[in-house]
Length: 76
Image 1 (tube, helix red, strand yellow):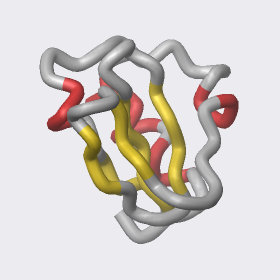
Image 2 (tube, one colour):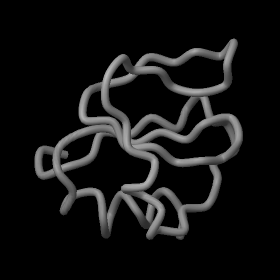
Image 3 (cartoon, helix red, strand yellow):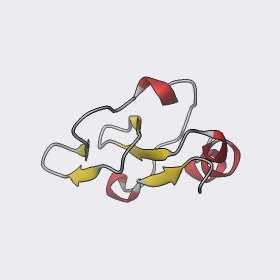
Image 4 (spheres, helix red, strand yellow):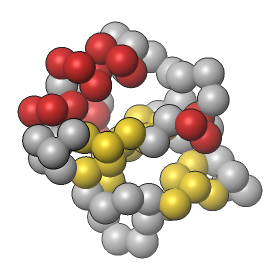
């Protein structure tokens, strides 16, 4: 599925948080807004992050991982 399809169909049903793709194309869920770290190729947040939370969804990579951050949850 595309990120647009994910945002339309799945994201509103999730717990509030953020999703973002790493430079390697792995999607991660963060309960709090992460900061980008281009030096290491992914978004960074001290504390909890959940890559496995999105493993059940086949979200296609986006063209520019640095623009992948999306807010999810019932407050979107």
